[in-house]
Amino acid sequence: MLNVIFADLIMSQLRPFHVAFPVRDLTTTRHFYEQVIGCSVGRTSDRWIDFNLFGHQITAHLTATSSQPEPTNPVDGHRVPVSHWGVILTLAEWQSLADRLRQYEVEFLIEPYIRFVGEPGEQATLFVRDPSGNPLEFKAFQNDAQIFATETTALTPHS
Image (cartoon, rainbow, N blue to C red; front, side, top):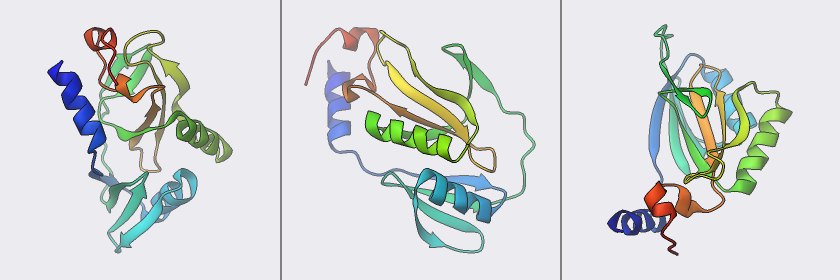
């Protein structure tokens, strides 16, 4: 029960997060995040760009190419990149973004679909890569109470 109360408190007082990530080219990165994803641009330099990603600050840092192999884990029949990040959207925002990505002919790493159907944490999800190969996940829940749901919490209704 404490976890449910804690999760509710977090969701009601959520603050924007910040994440920084490596990119190979600032021009293609800016086009992808600004034009394709729909981010507004904040501060910039010749080595980095700040973006507003659905109210969160993300910073693309210019760096050399990494040739490290990418580890994955099997999740619901897909190979999910272990290192990835993204935003939990509303279902309407998620569908709009999925449509926008299709409009820009972005290749999906994992096509938009509903996973964990009928289970705790059922969610709409999709994965894409930015121009530097960084994996991004965008997901949505019918009910935000399912974000941290487990089999135990799914059986306990709360507001």
